[in-house]
Structure formats: structure tokens, C-alpha cells
Length: 165
Image (cartoon, rainbow, N blue to C red; front, side, top):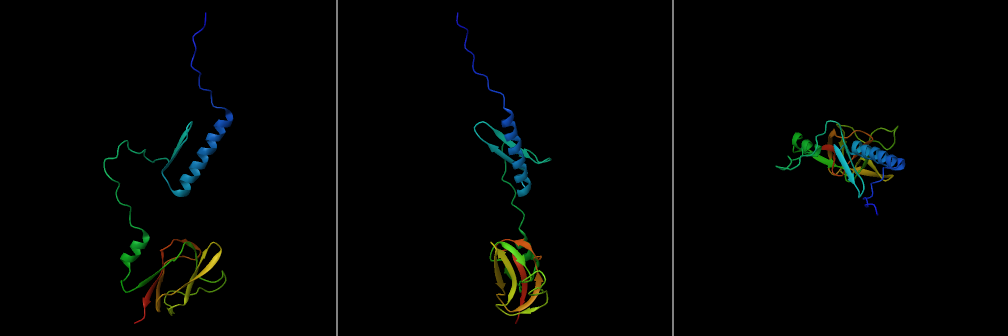
């Protein structure tokens, strides 16, 4: 008499598979920290891994209202605080901001210095190229908004210049 057929049982995870899951979890945790996320999830046909920061709430099952708008970025705050008479010189590219041509040299300009249109104010390094950033108006440097060797984004305010009358 033939015995009834049984459905195949799922095989237990092999130690190599456990190591892959642990390594994937570690990588996801690193991405979570690097990007400042509260949660990250990856899913494939046989595996689903979710990494969540401690204290981060799980997403709601149903969304009842749209999320509140994001807080304004620093650029908007600078525009709200400064006098409308000041000209904002913004970063024309993403890179690293340098106030001087070399680490031992004096800065191109300091707050209070009078500059001419076209005068070099700083350098932004992008992809190992040093790009001189020039004043777009003549005037007095009212404020330097970025620290030396700080990463800057496209459109980020670098200087506030009080134009000459």
C-alpha cells in the first residue's frame, strides 16, 4: 500500500544564509545611520528585512491625513533674517568651501572687507578641481555664512554683500 505524499518541508536556513542576513542587516543599519533615516526595508522573493531605529514608530496602517510640510531650509531662514538690501552670493555647485587658496594662506576676504565685482571671494573644490568664486557685485562683505572646509550644496548661501551705492 502506498503511503500518502507529504508536502515538502521548507529547508532550515543554512549557516551561510544566516551570515548573509546578518551582513545585509548590518549594511542596512549603516545606510540608515548615514542617511539619517528612521526605518529602511528591503524585500526579495525569499527574504524581507526591516531595520528601524530605537524609538521610531512603525508606519500607520492607513494614512488619514497628508504629512505636514517640511520645515523651511536654512536658505529660506537666511533670506528672512537679513536685510533686503544685502546681496546673497550662493554656491554655484556642490563641493567643499575654502576661504583661502591654501591652508597656510590668509582668507581671500573677511567680514567688513570691501570687494570689487569679479574679485575672488573663495574656492569651491568639486571633483578635485578648484573653482574660484567671484563677487557678483561690488560692496562690503557683511557676513561669511560658511565655515572653512565645509561641504556646500548648490544654491547654499555663502556670503552676504552690502552693495556700494
